[in-house]
Image (cartoon, rainbow, N blue to C red; front, side, top):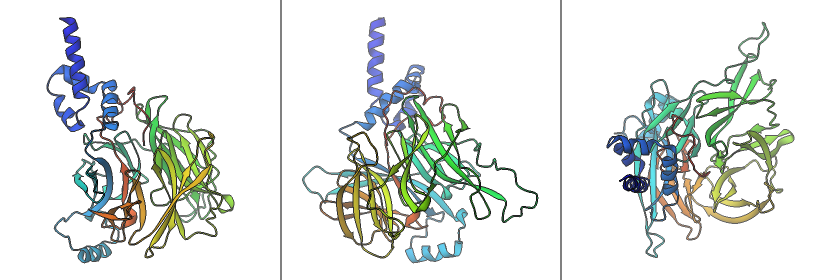
Length: 425
């Protein structure tokens, strides 16, 4: 009888681990046994692995962050544009929306037969948080990290969990000021970089934040950094931080891949580079860009990072808004074990009506944003665009997209630690 019970429980685990998170949340109430199984960290890891490697999955899933008017009855684009000018940054009139874009290429030999489903997620953001100001700073194993420079929020859209993190331990810890400093010279701090990912050695989800403090017009204070650990639910400051560069914003450049966070940065004398942070050893590193890059003399081109064929790729393209854009794709070659060796992989374009790229959803299709602030998919082979009914009323630069995998991992931390999971995007 004992052996039969063990076999029965093993069968239950196998079946449940293949179900989507929404079903598992409901099935927790079936029995104490099922609740114990589903809440077990090893089960969460097994469910995540099945979700990631399911060859029979009907579609690729992308999470898109965009902003809509609270008044959904207003749909005319000219009326929306007029209202946005009137609002002048009144974020109370807007809602942040995370949409799941399920994309499927039907396997019938017709490259044009791309089907999709859009699922809008109304997440329970706490009062006091202005969701429309939040930006995605990272995604890992079904958990998304958002930030508005002050508040940091973790959420798992699959199980509708949202958690606001404790206050920073360095953001408001400003250095002492002289008595005669006025409002123009008093120090103020700013989050210049943030990343979220997995420390695969410690089996911990972490967030890193880089903070710079400025007095007047000059940065007179050393850069500081802190790390949040989800299991401990606390921030701690890193010692002896010296990144030696300034992180620069660019569309779709903030990236986490295989336990490393990436940002676009500049060293003294306008030398551009890629700043990285290793979630395991908690150290910053700098990666050179291709030798032909010269931002000082080529400041009309943007850079974006993406993952293509399980490799980091760097895209460069015109920064001007109203021109057809051509794209160069550089692939990082780590065969020699040295990061920073690049090979030009592909050049494509010019592409009409495109602002900037967001994310590859397969080896041939690149999600981008057009001038109407709408989401499109561009096929590198056929050179055709597919349009999706997802738009941002704040403009194209506000849109973000990340590859997404469903999981039942809790953002509370107590159930996330110890999962036997692989490092993912």
